[in-house]
Every structure is written in C-alpha cells, then in structure tokens.
Image (tube, rainbow, N blue to C red):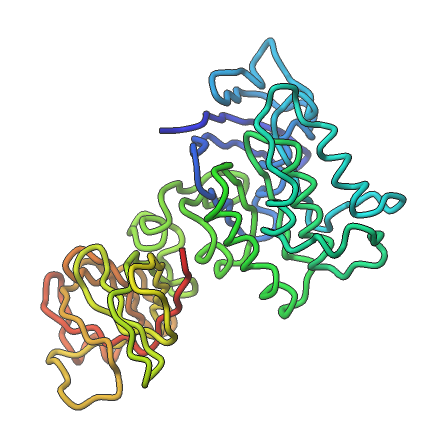
Length: 357
C-alpha cells in the first residue's frame, strides 16, 4: 500500500530534477545521495517550497500538483524539519510548540502533548528560548513543532547535518523512537549511509537529479542493479528476533527471519525484534567451517553475485538461506579461493551492529 505518488520535474540553470517515485503509507523513506544530487530540492518540491515545479503529486487521493493545481505549502498536510531547526527566536519552546499546534487542521487526529514531550524528552525545556538550547535540543523541539501540526507526512531535511558526532548519537535514538512509536510516514534526507541503515525502511537513491533506484532497504543495499552495492558503501541489513541471553558474556542470540543464528554484543529482551547491520568489510570468507576461531558468527552460504571490483578489492553477494549479506575481500583472496557463482562458502562475521525495533 502507498500513501501517494510523485512525478516531479524542475529545470534550473545547469540542473534538471526529474524524479518519479511512490510515497510509503508508513515507515521511513530515505532520500540518499551525494551533495548536489537533488535530495533537498526534491523534498522542497514535495513540500510546495519551490516555484515552477511541473508534474503530478497525489497524496491520499488528493491532488497537490498537476497541470491545473498547485497547493501552497500551508495547504499540504506536511511537517517540515529543516537542517538547522529554524525555531522562532522570539518565542519560548512552549511558544514554538503552540505555533505548530495552531496549524493543525480542524477535525485532525492530534498527538497528545504530554506523550510527545516524553517521546522527545523536551518537557524540561518548555520555558527556555532557542538561544538557550544546544543543537540537539533545538532539533528535538523542531521535530515536536512539526508533529504538532498533525501532518500526513513528516519531512526531515538532513536534521543531523549541523550537529557534531556526539550530538548526532544523542538525537538518533529519539528519531528511532519516533519511527517505532508513530504511524506517520517520514521522508528522511541524508548523505550519511549510517543514518539510513538505522532509520529507514525503504530508500530512494538520487544521482544528478534523477531517482537512480527505489526499493526497500534490504534490496537497495544488496541488489546488483543498485548504485549502493559498491565497494565504498557496502553493507547489508537483516531482520531478526532475540531468542537467548548469555548474561555472563553480555551477548544476545538473534534468529533471523530465515533461520540463521547470530550472536551479538549486549543484552536485549528475549522476543525483541532487532535489525542487524552487517558491513561487508566485517565479513570474511572460508572454504571450510572453522572449529577453533574467535569469530562467533560462521554461517554457510553460496556466492550469488559479483557486485563490484575496485582498487584490488571485490564485493560479493552471499546468499545464506535467503539472508543476503555482502563480503568485501581482496582480489588475491578471491582468486585464491577460486570463487565462482553458486560455490559453497562460509561467511565469518567479525562484527554486527544492532538497531532495536
């Protein structure tokens, strides 16, 4: 099921944005690409913040843009969070949130303020002014203000780009919580793949103003047709459920949806759904299963594709009982192991990053 559909064309001097894609009914759609690829421009076109946009935008059966219609940004049921927050400096945090609530259409479902304050941890900030907040606090308030408009979609334009690494790591859990707790579809713009891996359910990959690829997160990362299945960006994600804890070793066991078993750092509640992030550089290969190894995760698979070769390295797609992972190895190792399509191989996963759902 989809929330809507977009077909957008915008001509600027020296740049053409031409993008066609569907809007998800729920979850987070990541818009990913390098600087200058058109990510923010695409989001602004969807929000009604750009002039001379051609094409068609339809959301929940309502036309926002076509040859006869162009709704203003105020008429489009969106919440927009800018890179730098853009809070009103003359209003307190409470006043900024009041402004968001004042833009809620009549008869709309509204988020209870106390619940929102708890989700974003902003109740203690209500009497402060924007100049008294640091970057992460400003962004949490900006997100709260956008959500209080009761939007059909929440648009986030690189909300972490202006923050240093410690502030990014502080605010990411709040974004993950919004993803888990709220049913509002989100569009999330970033050039940071780590953010995409943690937050998104599906992705658009932008290249020079075009949508190069769209699909669910798993597919976009590992498909031979995807521009992300490259040596520089290689990673895969797997979905699973915690089945066991080993408290003495501070390790949890996760069974993936396809039945593979991973042991991951940390103690997580049994039955908890988690996302496993596996970087290709952390996956080595062996012809035989090691019996005495420091690596805990050794799983049988078969070579299913050669995705990329660059700078003496080869990126391989490995199918482990329908769990698809990537492995980045040297050309020398590739030739020494005589790897060919469908050859049985054992992946050895040195590290797994977990994202709780």
